Length: 405
Ligand code: HEM
Image (spheres, rainbow, N blue to C red):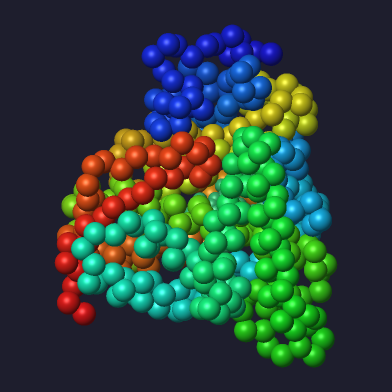
């Protein structure tokens, strides 16, 4: 073990997993990054990696296994491992067909529908004064995105969003056994729902009619077994639904107290909306860290980890590394380049990054146009104590009248 193993948190810096650290982990991330960027934490029996160069290396280097790192994660054990819990070459075999669901052609096919969903959602808020942005904007928009991808009907909305919400407890790789048990049964229910939906679709490419949704195109492809396809879908829901819903709340938490930012977005056009999405994800990464296991002894720029080490790449800390980002704690809407790691990196880079960017940019642009005087309502919003995703307990927003469409 390296010298960094002996470094202890000072009394005035809360551990990032302590009750105080969960609410505001950034002081401890700053301390770790500057004092012990590759840090052995004997209490958590983990290595916390917080520097940008170190995190990027953990995510990219084949010496770190996602398969071993994600082993504790609850899932439907009747299904084979998903792409997130496999290493190449298995991972590549699962990810390539996954592009039918989340690749550029899939996204192009749902883009107009998602834009219409954003407009409908904001239309529905025009007569309101104060709304909870997560309950009324983030969650319903995340559900709309999945209804489009999966070709589900509007009448499936309630059942799908309840299942997605329940299955999302599987996001936290450090969840205890009780939560993991709940997570496993939620995953089984989600699988049953998705299986019933897939059974309504033409199964193979041979002679099947043109598929009408990205999911239908994945089901009509022969490269994955039915169980593997269900694994991809379950992973997309668990890995995507809540992070997307919460990312929208987290973004508004940063934007709304800054009227000048909302004005810039209103005037800045699509290009600014696009860079703003990345900047908001950089500042408040919904998935703050992800787990790997070192297959050999590895020397990282900030220190060494031994073979067998369970490593957390703390991307939320890397995203504020002053060695890479000027004014790391400030919102700079037009920051470019912006090499943040909120979507991960290397082989497991978020398969839906383009979808998230596109959906987020449409929402930000429309929100700034429709509700230019929107602001936070009530007392300062509080962060939930869950580690993954990083999320607010609620976000009451005063819509400020909106436009008169
Ligand atoms: C703001 C929202 C999102 C964020 C911040 C996010 C972030 C991430 C991150 C950090 C990873 C890498 C995990 C790792 O390396 O261990 C990842 C992987 C993944 N994400 Fe996302 N994600 C988001 C939304 C979505 C959505 C909406 C979907 C699906 C519709 C999705 C599907 C996936 C899949 C399938 C993977 C696994 C890729 C692989 O293992 O090759 N994500 N995401």
